[in-house]
Length: 224
Ligand code: SF4
Image (cartoon, rainbow, N blue to C red; front, side, top):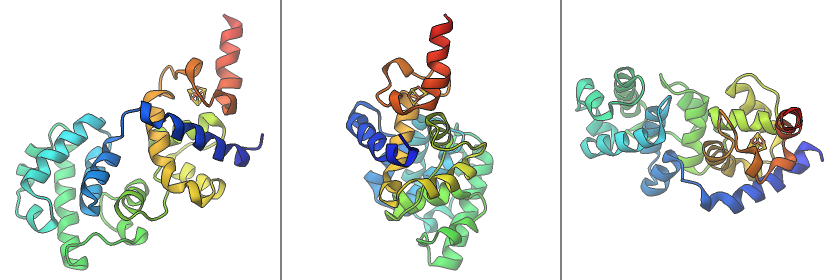
């Protein structure tokens, strides 16, 4: 079956299994807060950091400050202490203050619902800007993290070396009606089934659509 025809079916199956998986930290923060500012800041905290650590660090930080105006009143040291042990916590605390200053200076303290404007913030790349668009503003975007990149390549949807290239390829391949669901579904699936090491191919509900399954997993089984 052609890849473009498989996508609706794969998404349907993953949605069916969604309840079995733990909700990713960013989805949960977005659903609970409905606040683009928290989505943006938590996404920065989440880079190179485990979900559980991101969730706890976000909670500690928002108890101290949950708006750009309150955040700039905190010293970078105070922010660092609140978000520790997220990866690169010292750099992230400086970035957070820088972003908050810019939000106040240029946008009246509000996160702009504008992908290109978000990319001008230091520390905000395509993944973060897409996350803010999808989870903060319910607008179309395809956030590609390590899970979305890996799963899309294993399935054979794309053949790409970087998440940025995966995002651009997925934008062409995936019908827009599925963009909003794609990140959440593939992150959950990548955290629980299609893990970086030892993917659980033997119990995978979408194995019949997977190139890795056909070309790597089955071949290894036969060689045993
Ligand atoms: Fe991932 Fe294996 Fe499922 Fe393919 S069959 S999507 S590699 S878990």
